[in-house]
Amino acid sequence: MNASLFSTHTSQRKKISDPDILAPSRHEKEFGLFDSVFHEVSNAIAIISHESDNLTPVILDINHHFELVTGYHLDELRGCSLYDFLAETESRPNREVIEQALASRQAAILFCPWVTKQGKIIDIDMTIRPFSSDTDGSRFICVLRESNSDHNTRDKAAREIKSNLLAAMHHNFKTPLNGILGYSEIIMSEMMGPIGQESYKGYAQDIHGAGTDLLQLIDNLLELKELETNEFELQEEKFSIGRMISECLNKVSGEAEKTGVDLSYTVDQVSSNLLGDKSRLQQVIHSLLENALKFTPAGGQITITARRDREGGYLICCEDNGAGMPAQQLAKVFCYDTHLSDIYSTPTVGIGFGLSYVKQLIEKHGGTVSIISSVGKGTRVSLHLPSERLC
Image 1 (tube, helix red, strand yellow):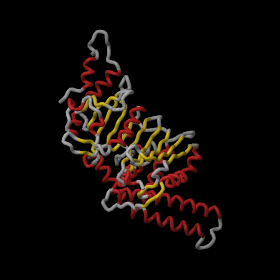
Image 2: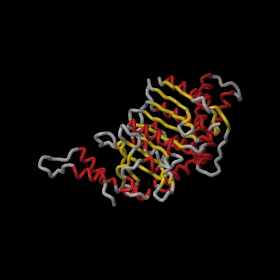
Image 3: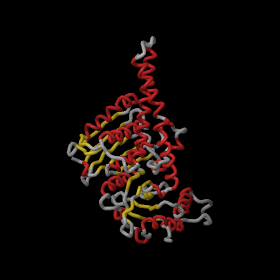
Image 4: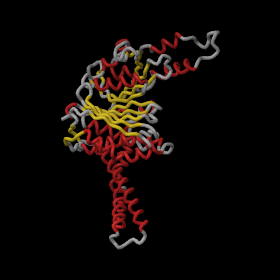
């Protein structure tokens, strides 16, 4: 087992037995705790350094599980660029996200294929976060998790629970809901004769509206289950990206105006037509906008941008300057059990289906999703679509 770089640093600092120190500092305690856990956890972790005059992040240290996953030892990686080990076909969009996160010292999560020492490409969800005890602000923690959730027992169990719940929805939820919608339509249309009190007709409209919203939610959840099957097919067509985004913004403009949040968008007109499932991509954009509205206070701003990236693919970003997410929450936004423990303490958080749906649908289009966020600095969700989707 290679000695940790942080162990070396810790040994160079004064110990509590030194006569001029009565107790260890908070920095020493945090460093010592981190070093104790660093090699014991089951996630692959690297410490990387990013100097302000160099955009390339450099690997400083790795833990034992990192060695097991990638096949490399510390002596083979120390001082090397992180980019040297990203799969070449996917590296460029990832570099842009990584560089933004490092420059702003924010946490980020992204899909990042990694090349092992044996030359095998493994699918990795990579989380980057600032090292909180760092004195000069140049070090970051980089965590690699294999995207195949079968490797994660807890995640697999959570997925099975949600899958069973969704399977029960079709009959147990939709059947009585269709009855509610049908009877409310009869009352609204006064099919059996006049109601008498006009206010009752308004109540029937409210019931029907709420039922329609609930039915849409159930359909979306059922579609999330369908996304995991091989039978799922995209309904592809050519459409204008600008027009699609404008339609999504129009749907949430009333709520944004009511809450005092400014909406704006910029679309690159070059190759602005896309081949994809327009209806479902609209659901993705709408979901991102609604989520941003939940956590952006009055006077805040939400911006949608769509443009070609440096490698010819297409990049759609939804960015807000709202509450943002702590690194601990960001690391699990795509997990199947996300937010389940937070429903009662924070009702606006939801039940975690939104970003799971976004990620899986974009992957069905051959793309990837990345997120940059930190508390108080807002959130930026980026959808990367391959160049062959442009037309």
